[in-house]
Image (cartoon, rainbow, N blue to C red; front, side, top):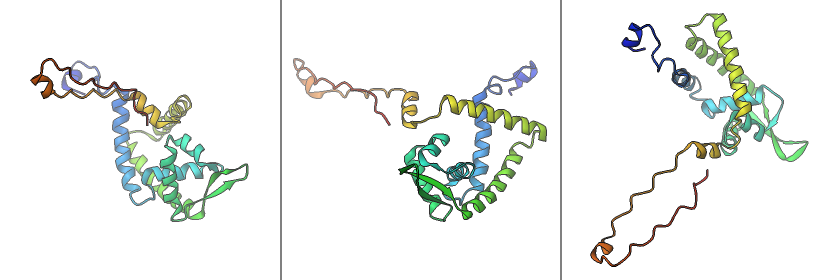
Length: 200
């Protein structure tokens, strides 16, 4: 809050901005979580994948990717990382032999419990300004918002979403044609028009 807004008893426009608030909290959480998960296979995203696999029935990679908003190719690499130390294993889906289910092994459950305890300490530090009741209320409200947002925008195709929010690149400046300048009667070569935006 700026000095001027404090003197007038009103919130600073930045302090009242949801994006700014979420960004500050998110950056603080990411820094602390990265430290707690620095040597975890796949880092924070690997932990999220293990959490998704451990907190429900065995699901295929596509279902996990959709739930977490992770590209399927990236998810494949993350599961590879978790599979090397024996945290998870892939098995064929009895209902569809082309699909692979992700099972969590005992080693994965033990690793998840250990890191979950560390992240609980991170969360407690981050929410230290709140009372236990306020912290529980905040968690419940954020969960409600996250679930409603996920239902409305499940991010099935992250590349398509990224393309929608990226502005068209500015066309490059056309170089000066020295040959045309030397011969005013000569027309410069026509520039080829773009056929469309590149997809992901």
